[in-house]
Image (cartoon, rainbow, N blue to C red; front, side, top):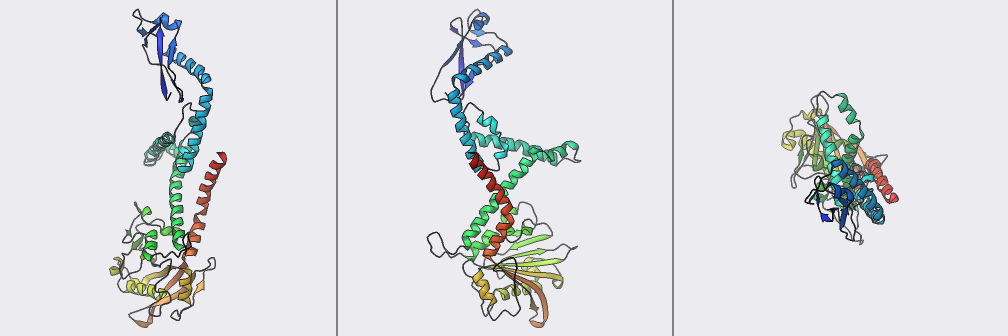
Length: 404
């Protein structure tokens, strides 16, 4: 028996159909049964041909309720076992799809006589989420907002929807940080050295050749939030450009061009998690490379990022992300003239107020703040910033496991 099982009706010892509706009993059972129903009541209301039983809708409802009562008792062990399977399926669903968990009613699933499989639970959650999301957009786009809209914005349904979106984004961040952690590990599981290309690291932060100029449909294109959460989204006043492989430019440029605010340019240089090719290089080390990029921008900003600006009024910042061993090698080399100081709350990251020359003149200097971050520090810093969300998800999973 599976799902709705039809009940065949008899009147005066002959098979007959109800004039209104049908009777059935719903259950999943490994054993098969054929269900028949006969009664003096049917005998009284059957037509002269014995083919049609003329009873009212209320009568059919009463009969159906009595059938359910009797057969539920008959199959109570089967129902209890089915509910155990449904509960197990629900727990599996909650672990796999935490962003959908809030959109199912546990009592209705576990209380069903039939086995509710994972596919059915997912579809039920999707349908409910779609209903609430449709209601959310219909309410949020209204103008002016009335009292009913305000109540919905503070309702449990609205909170479920917002938490669902947060679940997905937090899980995305967690997976990105796991990927970063795997890149900065020196050895694989077998203890073999694990070299990583600079391009692999670059693609994790932001796709090569990508230019981000507004906040529409771009958040998934970059993971610059690893560096700082202020780079999570971009607006028309805060932009980013990722250069293509082989260009004589820095890896990423981030700049602000709001006429009402101080203009800034941030030059972000990514190195290999294994070994930077120019750490401590006498010809041009990592710091000198960033200063050269700043000089190139100063002399011709439009060529670099197609930005018209008075470069003498720009605040310059350079960020280098490299292995801590490469940072140590860079700072201990003879070609670093200025003093660099350890960032107090980090272990292997440093900062310094430096400058770069313009027109190849030692007298014409432009200040630039340069920060050198180790991959290990950036990973731990990003993990710490997001830990409040990760712990929230972890607590939910632990609750589900304990409850199971």
